[in-house]
Length: 294
Image (cartoon, rainbow, N blue to C red):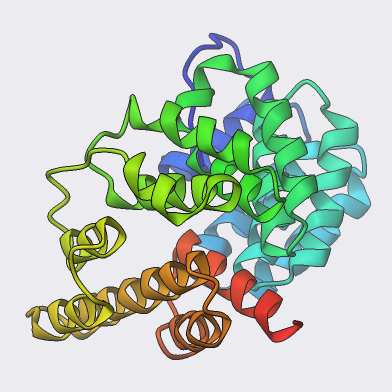
């Protein structure tokens, strides 16, 4: 989540959002929330359960709290974050819808809803929420790479191109940003012009990102990306993430070339065989589901 420190006096929901965002002390979540001590205790226990991975227990505690105070947006938001961790995205969306109704002035709620909308495959709705975030919090715009990805899947390729160019101003060493810019340009102008317009990236030390960049430059074949990922040393989890990135970005490369068979093959492998606990795995999953439906 994009965090903000601009407002000096955030409302209780903003305190909750920022606490979850930076993993601060749980006490900060409930402090000054304006609800009875019994509800504070329920909320505190629910967030403790969330932190410790006891998700079902956390949801039950929040169910009880919401019955006691159904107009408190913080309760819906925290329950949404737990449901999202359980991949119960429809239920999380319902809670975030309620949060937005109760606190329409809180941009963080739109940010969270935009992320969940994307995970549900609702790219256009995701862009709309992210646009609302930027309208309310303009300083978030350069950091908002998630919006660029949602634009790509919503077919808003020119908006995606602009978003990745803007993101480059605050994140200049990220090969992934250059790749997504390439993908947006390729959709409207073709692969050769996308390659000519490829953002200049250097300094991304992650494996196999240098090979991914060379692949989109046209300097190496996909085999070089896989070889780099296979050869890298590290923990099992690190290796899994490197192979995930290799298959995802090779799959996206084939997608840009309109090679549907190889795009489906590698993006499916990324999503199915190398599950990760980060947003890009959700991107791979959403893309694989789209390919499976075609």
